[in-house]
Image 1 (cartoon, rainbow, N blue to C red):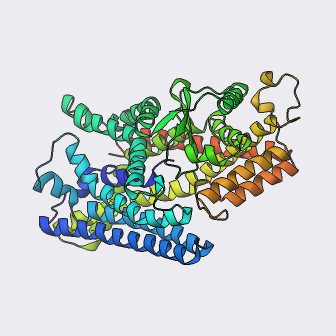
Image 2 (image 1 turned 90 degrees about the vertical axis):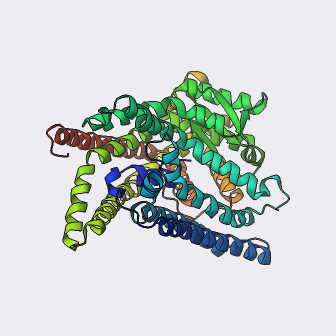
Image 3 (image 1 turned 90 degrees about the horizontal axis):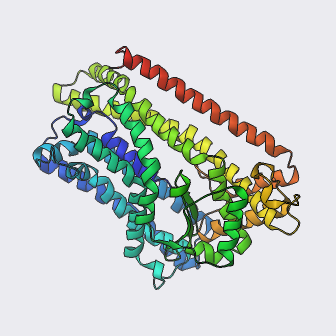
Length: 489
């Protein structure tokens, strides 16, 4: 659920020193034309892919696996292309200098940041618009369906994406436009950014659930057998949340999520299509999966991971700048071109390092966490089945002693397969964050056949988690030492 492309766009635009893109942008018309041309080109590719997918679906009744895979691959390439085009807009074509200097928005509150981010947001909107027609065809939804309206779905998607990123943007604006005006000397302090990032993490911890609740169309799950069952599961698992919500998606999305680290500000969201599609037992399994993320403390660890990586990036930004200077000096370019090349190289090196780390390390961690939550969902539904509980006092047994059974695995696997089918996802399609549905089901089936493997799996995840935390702590300590002694200025 995390809008990774938008996070990367924020890093491209604001994650590096302003000096990386402070060079002269050249003629304003040329900068504007290049920016608009890049956005329009991506939009044309997106509409072409979406319309081609819809055309193939009309010919055959439903798109084949080959067409679905081509659509998924094309969508990913368009996302990469959008980020690459936006990076060129910021670091090559001089868009920030155009906004700040040529248009005179330097020093304004929020407006300058919004205009700098505008090419990415516009490009993302147009790409989503073009791809929507392919997504609608893959899901088999007719245009007359309430969820078949492009305008409605684009509104919901943009609203959901911005809701998840709004806390970061809000705190960034407070840091740059409010604190910078009240205490102008604070930003020059070497410890300013690490302290601000710690405050950023705490701020997201507190306010993000409010943004999700306000920005996403939700309503409280009505009283009835389903709510009673889910509340009973939560009680047995020791899980606390502010409410269980129905997530209104116009029946377009079969999904669920949990948001909020603190119990009083935590919500579990079940989409309207999910509730209509799955059986009560399968819904209990999906709810157990979301509870598993909290039981294994995945959310605070993700927060620590992202804030720690961002703090490490800011503290070591001087190394990227020095490397950019060194590479640029070798080229023998003129002063203006040298400044641009230095900024581009710095941006490419920083983004490459961050991208590779997130893709490899975070991807591996996220897939392991998903499997932990899958196992927890199987255990929850195992106890819902007749004879599924080995304990006479069910409410008194801690969730750590719950066991997995083949019937629970079968129910949860059916839920996974149904979610994949309803969302038009190929069960064998790989996902860097979640893994393929087929691989997750196969893993659970192996555990059902040999439950003694589960403790070993849990120990491997714990060792990787502790090792990653230790590595991040050591890196932050080393960077802090270098910052303290002026080695990383």
